[in-house]
Image 1 (cartoon, rainbow, N blue to C red):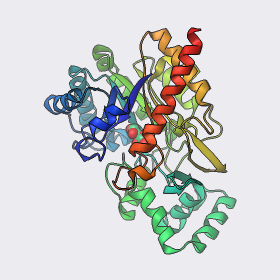
Image 2: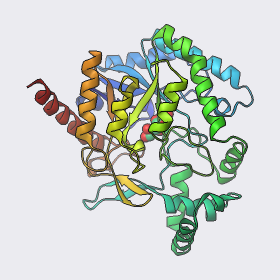
Image 3: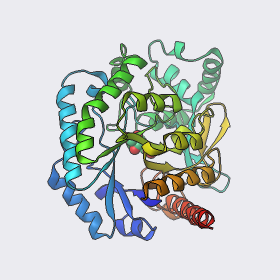
Image 4: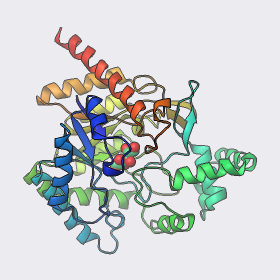
Length: 388
Ligand code: DNO
């Protein structure tokens, strides 16, 4: 396992020195000043890569090169954006950065309804609660026809919840969904969000799938020529939201992508926490089945506390995800390849040591430091066992 760490560049409260001291070799970063659809200039990529190199590490994975919404919709200037994407991939390859994480979730990147769910020890973590999301959709956003996307029980529970929530809690949910998380390109107002959702009115699941596979097959010649690997990030959470189609939520979706896009340069970010958001997903089996296509890992653990409600757990090793089984698959695949795979500790608890600074939600120093240490310890132990 190559130890990765997501770094938000100059805006990040965490310094490269701190990251290196966590035991990291591979930094995961992006050109944050560039908008989706723009070409990333070689000089800018080089400048950031040099900064990371000077700190004793390598910028080896990009997270993300965002796919412009128009590519997902086949709207407007989408063909230009595909050409620009290709150029960005060539420019990254020229700087020896050959793994690209991205997602194909319409409108929103990942979604949570609570960014500070308090654990018994007083630390806090991110939480997704489907009833809170439904309540927001039905009673705050008031999305037209939203009711038909929820069963009667969820609608009733959402109504009861919303009625009893104090205004501050309502605001907490609204902000968590619309503004809270890194990854989302722009903070959204409810009106803007509704407008963007409406633009997908005529785009069903099959259409979105076709657009994803078409995009990937279109860029495949560049991937093969440069050696760049595309690592799609699974839908987080792995369920339809706000009436939007979802195309990468489970093994069936991944299987289909692999069938439609035969190049092994088209692969996956194995994000255990995103896949683990569904009790039907078996993250270890997914790793095993698609191992040659796993180009990058996000490892973390979660706990489901009620149907549709889960939060990040107190340890990267404990919870719904069988982390021992998963790391075993990782080590097997690394052996087969004869090289390591970059894995970053995905999210972490917000601990006392980070209270004095503001990190991006889920991306504190202490929580990830502990998470990475746990993962490295597990790798060390399992490697020892596999050799013996
Ligand atoms: C959340 C992240 C995502 C991820 C994007 C990739 O913590 O894993 O925001 O970076 O979905 O495009």
